[in-house]
Amino acid sequence: MDKVTATPQAIDLIEKLKAKHGSLMFHQSGGCCDGSSPMCFADGDFMIGDSDVKLGEIGGCPFYIDKRQYEYWKHTQLIIDVVEGRGGMFSLEGPEGLRFLTRSKVFPTSET
Image 1 (cartoon, one colour):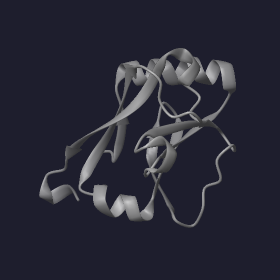
Image 2: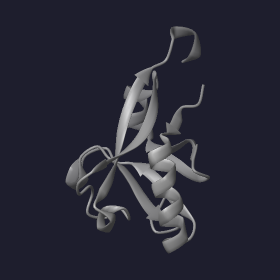
Image 3: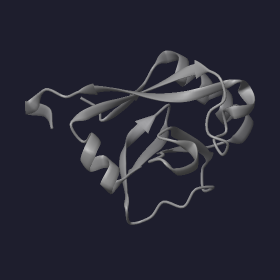
């Protein structure tokens, strides 16, 4: 089972954003100014560091999370969805009137 996946609505929004901004990447925010949200950036606009883990890809875009946050969430599958409203001020979907949202599902013990 994938560590990160996306709903069809999230994939549709990703495709729309790729048409506007080109290649994208995601980083699961760990708090601070944007709460705990999946943040969408143009590829290269967010510096991935040694403390980040690549969980997988959604809509053909890499998805990262901080190692410390991953330790809390490693027993779950992250499911990226879309809801109406304003999300993180730095995330590309903001002007669309939508925001990405992380839902989660606990992995069976054998899959962690």
